[in-house]
Length: 415
Image 1 (cartoon, rainbow, N blue to C red):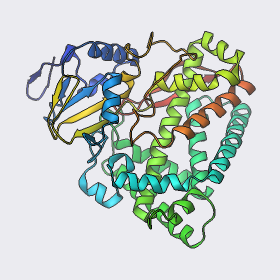
Image 2: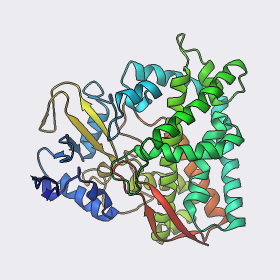
Image 3: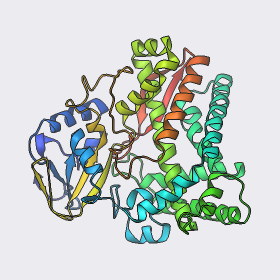
Image 4: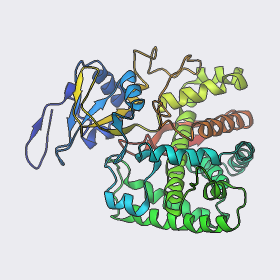
């Protein structure tokens, strides 16, 4: 139960836990995990209302329910948006719809174009580039000995890989990175930093303008990079237009960089605070690195939640849902579900099977970048642990309070 200072209204909440209250998302991660464990044990509907807006949602906290909603797109639709708050209609009109906010047939149409652009030749080149960038990042780390892992390593690798893959000129990368940081401010409702009104949208507009110009240039003179492939691919007479290209690039940068960056930072911290697991990994690095990466993603769950809108009246696990209702898929809770994972709070790199939902619950919106993220994590940790085996985190990571992504702002290093 909680009260608002403005109205004195009181709200009964399941188990005394209020997922609609921004203060909940300021709690330490172990406290939040314990709260979700209590919610998973509650039979019946879990409904929460934001007393500031009067808008409510049903919380899906169990693994089976999140999977069902993810794989039933005809009932649980992504439009008008999967983030909280949903993007305004005018924003979607001006900047284009991100693929995560689309349903079939538009979603399938765009996904086919993007999938076709990832040719075997491009994938091979990206894999080689990941190894080269990882070596360069670790070279700089060994030479310069920075204090923060996030800025020096975790953010560098995915950003440089994506820029290389897309063909973004070096001269524009620092500027675009600043825009990415500003554009990602609007996602989630519990940021600890004060927002500057309009800064995120202005950054998004500038970033998409740069990419649109690159797209026009690559249509005239393709260079073999991903932008060239996306603007010249011909799938049933369709290719990405400038607005679609900008929306896809924004998704790649904000989603692809943020999620991998956070998984890398959480991963190093997990290895540092679980020396027995680190020792196990080092005993067979090649054989266990894949399982270690999967467990890092499960345990940290970089994307905490996505929302869906109920398209038709439906019943899910005994809960009646009406058309127009909002449901929120809590991936982090699903990844700690006792019905699926033995000792779910433990970090165990040998966990098998490990059907985590760190890349989504399956269905049409399963993460397009899952393969890329896995490769980046495996290559970087192999490089780090081989060349700097004593590297470890110091203290707790500094987190950015959010109900959307499990973001690490900084992580102190020791060698």
